[in-house]
Length: 253
Image (cartoon, rainbow, N blue to C red; front, top):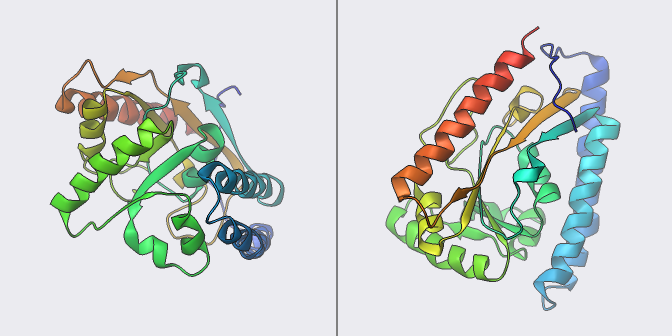
């Protein structure tokens, strides 16, 4: 899809409130419908469980587009390598946790372990074999990421890491953690950076979903075997933040 050069600041109205409410209701119904299926497959293969996860993901992407009028334009798909690796992505919204799965299956997320305790949704999430860490125990968390991340990579799965650690509002930038670069260097695998402006339409912890076209850009591969940890992290940060500035500039009326 081609990158759009038009953007206008979203404004709330009654229609957007209603659409957002309908989406949340449908999403809730989809969770309680699909979670039991995934639970029932807990002793089956990862592939069997992930098949149903992807159906749920695509259903939610369809609902976002057809209920909320929220779609996306993808640029740089040709940069996706033929082998799996590590995805270092900008994190502004819950939207990218869905969209990245639609673009890069199969994959696992690095996430905080508390998410696995969320009733129904978190229990189903645990069966997708994410890398769940205790953020309060940094040394143990890094060891777990390196150990489990390398194991997931060897199984042919992408590993998604948000280097800023948490969702950052549009126009702001968090500190880039080098743990993803450490894993890439250790495993000698490719790193794919992703920039997007999902937070402009689906803000952090926000109820409203504004219609529009989210711009998603996939960057050139950074070879984990060819650069130091510091270089991998800096290259990813420079590319992502450079693209964010360009997307913001192009979106201005």
